[in-house]
Length: 565
Image 1: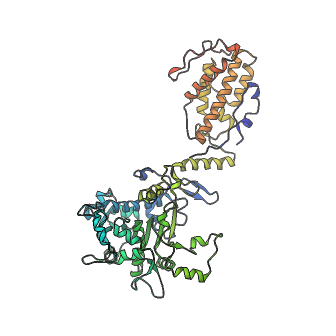
Image 2: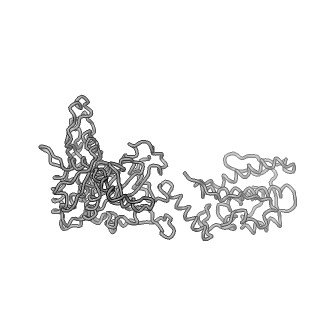
Image 3: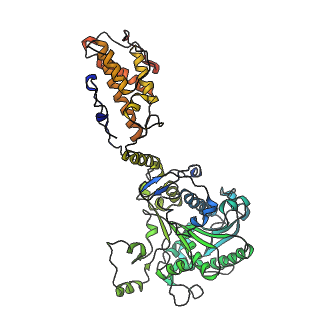
């Protein structure tokens, strides 16, 4: 569309109109996510245009395998499919429940245990209507021994074995129908005790035990994670033994049903979820679909570990905050598949790569990555605060608001989508009227067939003593050419009113497009009358004119209103 100056170039100069030269784009700029389920901004991507589009898709049951990663989430992450977003947030709530159930009070006799019984656990955490029931509590044991001097600091003392998460099964008929299968969730919390922190620091890679490593393969994982998964003490089975027994029972109990196993966790819990998925897909044949949803997880194993995960059919979606340093440790990555696609990187010589791998510090990223960033949040999540960037609530906030890499945040998504829609229409010479949203914009519509501008101009005509409805632009020019002639006071006022009306209508149009702000036409009417009042003071012919009242939002006529024939 042409600029306003070009649109009004015909027969307007003799009225003294000086429309503004606009067409400048406006540059647009950690809340709780408890209401996220109520917000429904769906996205899709038009490959031919690269733009975001709004779609509506609630067919979860028919697409559940896509959301569980059967196609590696191709086409679902950028832009983020809204149903997938809801699933990620739903599983994130199970991880939140694992944190809520854990007793963090070091002075309590129940420190490092679950605060609630299995039957009421999810209800106590706000998930009583989730359709799931907890069938097993999970405990992890740390192999590291705390130093004796730690006894002098009671708040740092921690048991070797602590509650780490739970297994839950969907048992609600309606929820099973909605999901399209019976879902099994294994949820892990993140690091909470001093013993677990010490395990985290054991960052070198170690070989998996024989019962977890296939023949002719050398998968290696982080020493501390493996220790927590396999260690046991008298009276406490290992996390591994508990998981394997529970999975065997689930497969037996629901052998005739469509199942899925979803493992999810945050931080340390994300690493344990990945390791658990590897173990059960190695130990069991003919498993249902196994998926890992990892929130802020550190690296777990080497390239051989990743290869076995992929070979076993395990699907891993890593939700990563690029400002979270935990996702970039331990060790370092070389010749990663994602990195190798970057033409700016060159492959290391094989002998050097081998030497580096022998150091037991070379890890590999696993699965598919959903990359988010705290910097994209308009809520000013601190970029320098590691704890905030790593917090699970931050991750859920980012997931809830992420749209796509081209319009990263939901708070601005509607504006971006609307703007891009306008740009596509503009390329075709079609622009929707920003004032009424009911018709395409052109000169005749904007001045004055649009209900908004028509009401404004009709009111201003009445204020001048012209008792008729507003006409289209060309008709208004023709009427003025016939009745508004000469250089008397009424002609001067009429020209000033028309020029001001055009200016303020165009200004209002741009405010609505670029600043997402709107004013009723009555406000503009009052502003125009004030403008005419101040401008008339400069002309001797209008010196006797004035306004009797401008209060209360009403507009009163001049004491000597114009009277056109």
